[in-house]
Length: 298
Image (cartoon, rainbow, N blue to C red; front, side, top):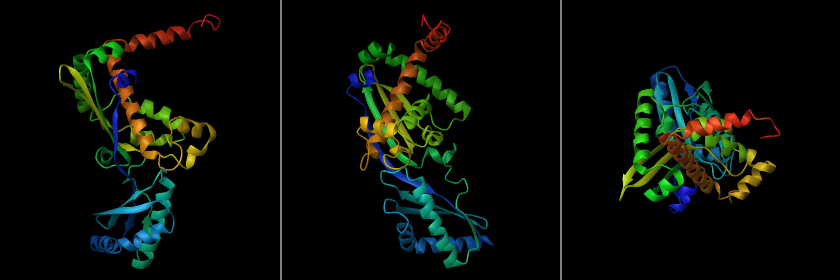
């Protein structure tokens, strides 16, 4: 964080903001599933009105339908304001499903069926925004990297290549060192749904050499499911933590998402520097040795 601050700070931008839920309608044939998909698209304004009866903050903005045999998977995409919004969209889409079933005669549907991959790693998390999609970038002068990270930009670029090749061979979803660590800490401190770390940690970070040997850092986090109103954000300590970040209440969720994204990038830069110059294991060894000291000496 000190290095990024010395470099002029990180640029963070919310690119997209939505949350989706995909139920499953079960019919008797693919033809009927196709007909129901057509009905949903033709009655989208009506479905928006049904959703609006359950929430004043959530808005149905998109509908995508996918037919798989006699089953129809309609993906309903919502904006949720400053709330994380999971309960909001669950209730709204349940109302939509009940209405659609009543109007079309469909006898069976399931509100959730894994298509949205909520709290599960999946390829869909690589490209569709789920929560806030945030982009981060900044340029770290070589002198700043060497002074505050103890490593040259060239060394960081070389280490990033090793990490990239390793992730490719592992079939990893996303490319980062440990976004999940920072996410877990911030989510607990600020009253977020900690299980969403599974989705939110699927992000990308990379580095390039630019100019006279400076380091360009870029990141994309497509699944930051966060909120600054409702749920755990109202707990006393968590509310205080959000207030420290000037992220408590209406109108602050995008700012909070940008802060979270920049923090994760700082964490990845730090661990990458420690692995690149060999200090990573030294810090862990020192911590273990300190833990063995008698209480009076520690």
